[in-house]
Image: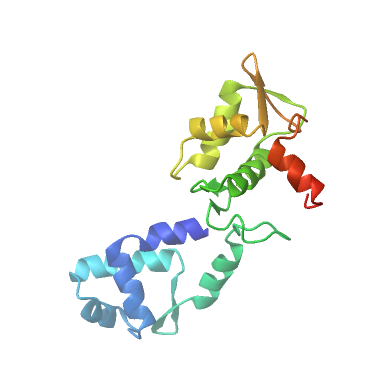
Length: 189
C-alpha cells in the first residue's frame, strides 16, 4: 500500500466515516454499523475494504485502526523538500509533481531548475516530444500544463532550444545588465 492508495481509499465518504467511527471506539461490526449512520450494507462494505487494505485490523474480537501502518506510510511519503534543501520548493512541489509555479521570478527559476535537473541530463539533446513527455509527468494534476513549463524553461535559459532540439545546460554567459553590474560592484553576488 502507498500513501496515494490510502488517500484514494478514504476519499470515499462511507469508508472515511467507518474509519472515523473505528478510530473513535467502535470495536465490532455491529458497533460500526450503529455509529456510522449508514445503511448496514454500505457500512459493512466500507469496513471490509478498510480491513482488506489493513487500515482497520482485528485484535482478538475488537477492531482498531492500525496507527503504526499509517505512521509507516506517512514516513514513506516523499518530501517536497530535497535532503539538505530548504522550504523553497514546499509550496510548489509534492514529491515529483509540480503543483504550481511561483510568481516571483527568482523562486520560479529555482523551482524550474530543480524540475529540469531531474528531467534532463546535461549535454544530451532532446526532441520536443521527449521534453513534453518528461514535463507532462511533472505537471500531471498541477495547475500548469507542460507546454507552459517548457516555455518558461526556455525563456529562463534553463533549457536551450535550436532547430527543435532541446538541451539542458549552463545559461549563456551574456553581458550583465546595469542592475547586475551594480550588484556585483557592491560585492553582493
